[in-house]
Length: 120
Ligand SMILES: [Zn+2]
Image 1 (tube, rainbow, N blue to C red):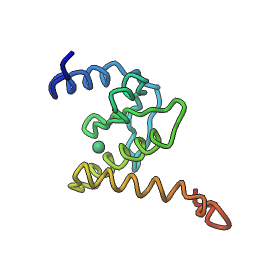
Image 2: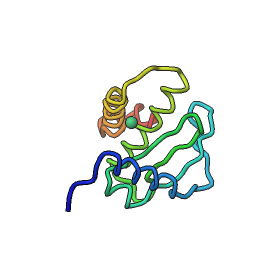
Image 3: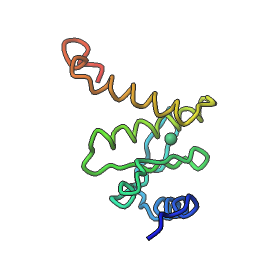
């Protein structure tokens, strides 16, 4: 079987996002309510760790069985929303690197001691 084309992958991604059910919750990002839609294992198989549509205030996240990879996806999508809110013209790769840095900082056990523990 041949590899799917970029267009086929994009179509499959769009279908997965369209089918993702709303949790009925809002995630407030810098005060803006984003409708939360939950991604399933199909999305993960395709490497979709999240998505964000700031124009429609919609965010797609993996919320079940949260792993460090899924949590990094959450941070990544929140950063996309913030970049839009604050009109920061950030490249996807910049968002990816910021998400990694923030994730590593938040999960660093050395930051979970003493008075710093109150921060997280
Ligand atoms: Zn991204």
